[in-house]
Amino acid sequence: MHISILTFDGFNELDSLIALGILNRVKQPDWQVTIASPIARIQSMNAVLLERQVSLQEASLADAVIVGSGMKTREVVADDSIMAQLQLDPSRQLIGAQCSGALVLAKLGLLDGLPACTDLTTKPWVQQAGVEVLDQPFYASGNIATAGGCLASQYLAVWLIARLAGVEAAQSAIHYVAPVGEKDEYVARAMRHIGPFLP
Image 1 (cartoon, rainbow, N blue to C red):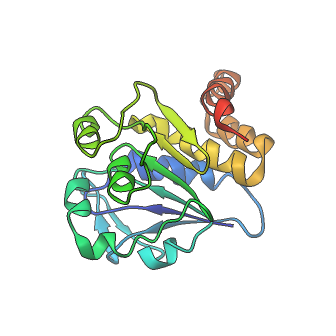
Image 2: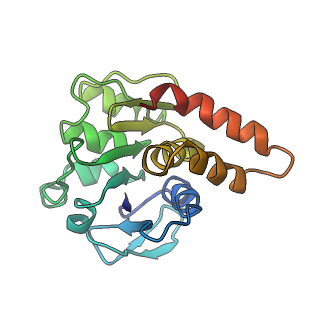
């Protein structure tokens, strides 16, 4: 099971790395979580350097993909060479978008007829792309999910785990990373957000 997090130059560390950390709580022999990027080394919005593990073409073959967020997403969607590499298909993949990642899904035509969640900065751009933006942290329809707000990345990760490895694995993953003394509260909140969108 390969889950890839698309991470572009200027990425938001919280959006990509919280999901990466939670997803890697699943300990199954075939479970693999990778960072994908169009270039070998990317720099975050706070100058953290990260090396990609797979290319965008490899990520397009993954079982699940999260499109991360960052300060250069509008440049990403304007770059035809990058967008052409994104061969995402909800008929064979689970696809999630974090914050401005919703703009990427909109430009790929994957949000046609669907509302989406995104961050407040990206909201007008997603609306200009013809997508209704919801005032909530998480929404999913079928195999496509979106999350709005950096810390909502936990909901994307938990949704993916629930879909790919089961609800018990998802609850265990969020329980592990939740603050001591608040673990049950975190699990309950995560399940409250994603539960209505599980098959």
